[in-house]
Amino acid sequence: MKKPLISIIIPTKNSKLMIDACLESIKNQIYKDFEIIVVDNNSIDKTKEIARKYTKLVFNKGPERSVQRNFGALKSNGQYLMFIDSDMELGKSVVADCIKVFQGYKVSKINKGLGGIVIPEESFGKGFWAKCVTLERSFYVGVEWMEAARFFPKTVFNEFKGYDNKLISGEDWDLNQNIKTKYEIFRIKSFIRHNEGKLSLLDLLKKKMYYVSKINNYSSKLTNSSSFTKQSSIIGRYILFFSNPVKLFKDPIIGLGMLFMKMSEFAAGGAAYIIKK
Image (cartoon, rainbow, N blue to C red):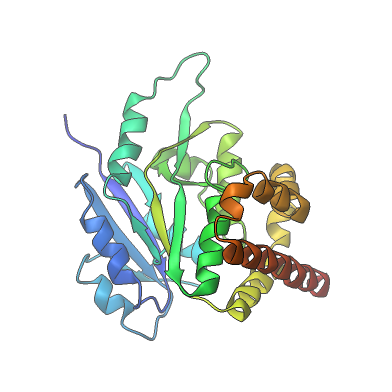
């Protein structure tokens, strides 16, 4: 039986420091029936040059990830679509594990159809703040309101018209929640490794302020209101963190640093939200 083709779509912008490792991890997948589609947003570094070593399907499109991802989907030939970022590296069995889930899924009166697959993420990076982010993200594995699907049947993706082009923040959650209104979302155990690079606290706060300033288009949608209430709750996050104090304070300095980082991010995000309003 012919194996289904998977289209792996990667939006990029000035990604020369990480795109090679990302594409190499795709090349090393144990499942080999895939195509790589890179959609670059006017990079001024060597991102496109590096990408062309791995695929001929390198395009230029902007201005943000939702538009880039949807453009990549239009150019795809695969039966399934997978979306990752240029700072991510796939475990060798990620694609194979996603396919196994779909091949083993049986539609019935109870099972309403499989619409997407969540791939858990673990972070890594250099320096103190990257370690704090790594610890934070470890608490979100398996938390439904913090994870979002990255792997979809193309028919389902098209049925929901892909990512909302108006969303710059929360677009992953938005599509995930839309699909869940009609289909099931499953998850696999294999991980994506997210390269945080070398971070500073100032970098983190600037990023938080940018995305929070763009969050209104996501939060104002009725289908997102329940999840957004949880995602935006500092109390909810801290309850989650303190639900596993052994993990939180395994390294007390990193644990305290992570709690301070999150408090600072919520303060910066709150300021950005008020300014935007």
